[in-house]
Image (cartoon, rainbow, N blue to C red; front, side, top):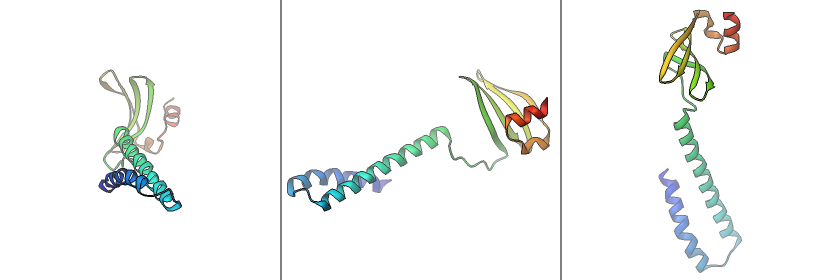
Length: 122
């Protein structure tokens, strides 16, 4: 990350002096293109890191609580299918509350989608 910011500073300082000192050549054009590519890649990586941190993408689920699926019902209401120590539960989340809607048998852990579990329940 430090190298990225250092390269931006060097690019910005070198761009002004390069324009005044030499004419545009193929090598300087290639160098400018590479610097611009590095800047774009750096911005993409920074945005990816922020999105991953904000939305929790790419989290490893190694603990005893696994969120199998989330389904948003209304803007602030969500259904969550959660597995805790082999037990699958359907939770209602909304209005500052989390409520247990139903428990599923322990063999339901291999069915991780709502359709299969709802069909099994009915």
